[in-house]
Amino acid sequence: MSVAVKEPEARRRTPVAPGRPGKESRHTVGLWTRIRRDRSLLLLMAPGVLFFLVFQYLALFGNVIAFKDYMPFLGVKDSPWVGFANFQTLFGEPAFWHAALNTVVISLAQLVFYFPVPLALALLLHSLIQGRVRKFVQSVVYLPHFISWVIVVALFQQVLGADGALNGALGGSDGHLVDVIGNPDLFKPLMVLELIWKECGWGTIIFLAALAQVDGGLYEAAALDGAGPWRRFWHVTLPGLRAVIFLLLILRLGDILSVGFEQILLQRDAFGPDVAEVIDTYVFYHGIRDQNWGVAAAAALFKGVIGACLVFTANKIAHRMGEQGVYR
Image (cartoon, rainbow, N blue to C red; front, top):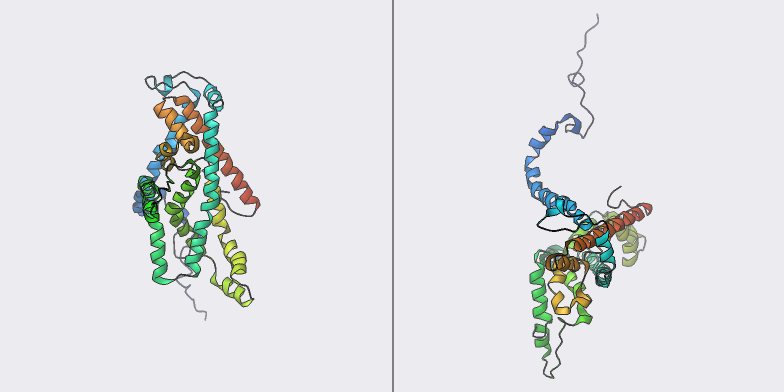
């Protein structure tokens, strides 16, 4: 006599759509359900999204001023079109090209001398310093990131100015004062030094996060094979950081014509426009002080186009070198 065997309960369940184990598939959850579920995260993200929408994306429509003889009392819509006349005026001004040259020189100096500092500091903290000392040093170097440029410039003036702490420490009894603030020859090194002091902690955090993803077993295997510290860095650490290094370099190239508007504007009068004029301050003074809105907008649009082209080019090079870059 045959006996009917019940099918196990687990086999008679409705099949579940493929997805992550133990979780509902993303396609089985409706949009509004996800919004209600993640509403706290969306509310947390809303201020940042609103900031970029208002001050970045909506502001793009203001670029039309570069092609108009903009008059505030007429508005953007009713101001007359002038085509590329503003660009012709801009490219014919030696002051603009001088500002562009200063911008590129300062930006390249910051890229060359600033970029290795957070990497070296991250390697030092990761390899040599452990425990509470590491956390303390990491917090100390990260704090200046939250200080405004107004305070940073004031601090450097109190230290490196003619009446600053440096001259007080050196004595100055012979009447020879070391005045870094106001010396045109030292303007560019000062910009790099201020940037390193303020932002190296932020870069260190990024590199430390990348170093945490490197497999520690690779270091042990390399050490067993007789690799010294330098070879372990070259063959284990550096390949693990390549993706982050390429990403930061691409983003920095996109901002190569932006060298810190607040930092330079606060010190422009002390050093003079011959050495301290950059594209951002050129736009500020032409647009706000001289009310030459069209030429200022043309300069800003030119800077944006060059930055975008540099990002696209650097990202393409990163792809050819096998890296992910900023986007695919």
